[in-house]
View (cartoon, rainbow, N blue to C red):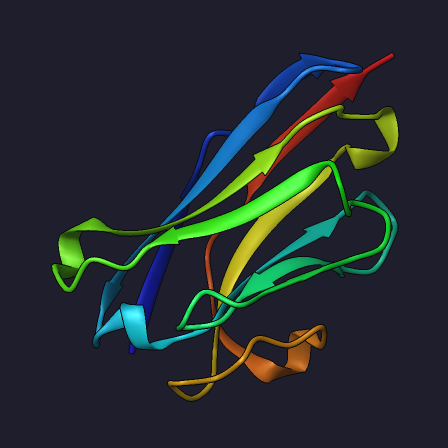
Length: 129
């Protein structure tokens, strides 16, 4: 079992930056690939970025060059955190952002939300124009 909690959402003007954090705990969270997804009102939850347990990254085309995913792979469960640095934010980035861990350890990360079994509660990001 892996438990996830997101932090760092808020209100920002277009062109601004935010950093989201996903604090992971439980059964060796550093062994799991973690993804960020987002869901705008009335829309489906969509992939944003993912990072493998070794640090390999994937990005949605809409955020490439603006968002950066990274992780602190401490073996200390209390300090295992995945970050999403979001720069040059646009109003279209407004959504609830969720982090998620893959179903099995040692994965490479996936664009498909069905490949993730553990989810955080979400954090709201609002970008004003």
